[in-house]
Image (cartoon, rainbow, N blue to C red; front, side):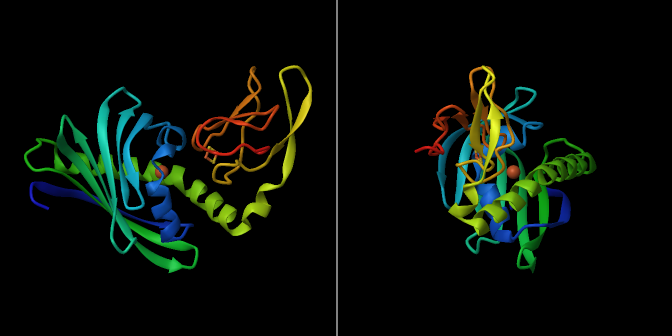
Length: 218
Ligand code: FES
Ligand SMILES: [Fe+2]
């Protein structure tokens, strides 16, 4: 990797398969929701099964371009960030299966040569950042694996939720989008905002009013 220097690495065991971890990395939409402590917004430029390219905004307002490329063997990925057209950092991940539903991720971190950032500080920054990101991702991967295993039948369970007028409606336990827990209540307008990707559903009708999912009554 010409022009980049390695500043550190992180190895961690995950309670999810490598395939699930790759699926999570391909899921650009969760950044401002699951990783709301890091990202304020993400606006997609392009996505396909091998990666994506988006304009992202950090919580402090810093704009950045982020490009994710999954390795051809689907056992790793590269996540590169760019500022004003120039690459400013890169994380390179590889996965090793440690069981049928567990894996070990090893991340290596790089910054541009001659950037002026002290190597140790840059390495510590990336280790802290990716430790937090993986802490936030792991429950999502676990829920997603359970949703895939349960299939459509797993999405039938209902609970009650209260509307602003005091009436009670039946809403699904799992979000119609990816089958992750719909852990939210109707707001003053009767809308439920799923915490995983921010899709919104009208609790009265079950219709998806923001996002690209079917509602639960469609
Ligand atoms: S699981 Fe994606 S918006 Fe709910
Ligand atoms: Fe994530």
